Length: 318
Ligand code: ATP
Image (tube, rainbow, N blue to C red; front, side, top):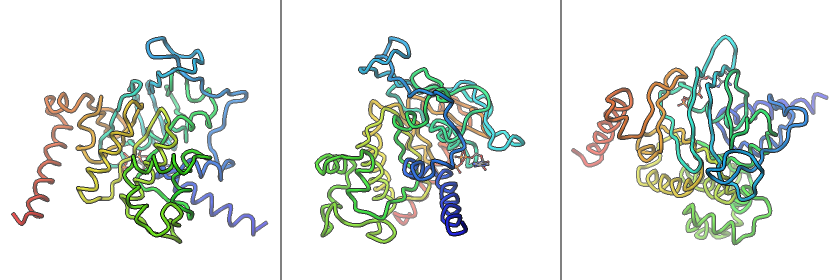
C-alpha cells in the first residue's frame, strides 16, 4: 500500500506543479485522470463542431469554422475566501488574437486555466463555439485547444516522439514538416542521430528557445483551432525572442488565440489587448487605442521602451 502511495503521491505533487505552470497538460491528464478536480456532467456530450462563420452556433456542421471563445461575466476564486477574477467579460472572435497583460499575480494565467477547464467558474460562463465548457466533455475541450506553455518539459524520449506527441500516429514527414515550420529542423538535423536523438533530463539538453520551438512544432502538428500561448517570463536573448515571436505569429494565423504576454512587444498586433489588474479588466483596446488613452497600458509601454533602450545602450556601450 505504502509502495503504491508514494509514487501516486509524487505524481500528485508533480501534477499540481504542472497544472500551475500549464506544462504538458495533456500528458499529465492521461496520467492523472483520477486527480481531476472537475468532473464531466453525467451524460455530457463532446463539443459539437461549430457552424460556418456567420451562421450562428451549433449544428454539428463538419465544415464549421466559427471557433469564437467568450468569457461572460466570469467570477472565480481558487479558495472562496479570496476572489481572483471579478466580472471578466471578453470575446476572442474566431481566428483572432486577444492578448492579456498586467502585473504578476493579476490573474492572467488563471484565464488560460479556466479556458482549458482545469477549474470551473463560480459565476458567469465560458463558451467555445457557443457551448458552455461545463456542458461538454473535458477531453473534447482539450482536443480543440493547443498550448505552448512557458516552460516546456520534454519527455525522456526521442525528438520525434516529443514532437509527434501533438498527433499520435504522425509520420516522420509530418513531424519534419512541423519542425521546419517551427524552425527547429536545422538544429535537429545537425545532431548525429537527428530525430532519433534522445532529449529531456537524461538526453540532450535543449535551450529554452529550442524547447519552445519543440512545443510550437508539437502544437502545429496537433493543428487545433484554438491556441493558448503562455509567453516565457525567462529571458531569451532578443534575437531568439524575435524569432520565436514570428513563429508563434505564423502558428496563430486563422486560429482563435489567447496570449498571456509578459512583454508588450508581443501584443502590438493583437485584435484586442486586455489590461488586467487584481482580477479586473481595467483597460481594453488595440495597441494604438490604448496608447491614445494614456492610461496604465501607455505607462507600461513607456516604461518598457525606456528599459529596452537602456539595455540597448548598455549592450552598445553607450
Ligand atoms: P504571472 O504574471 O506571475 O504569471 P498571473 O497574472 O498569471 O501571474 P495567476 O497565476 O493567474 O497570475 O494568479 C492569480 C492569483 O491567483 C495569484 O494571487 C495567485 O497566488 C493565485 N493562485 C494561482 N493559483 C492558485 C491556486 N492553485 N490556489 C490558490 N491560489 C492560486
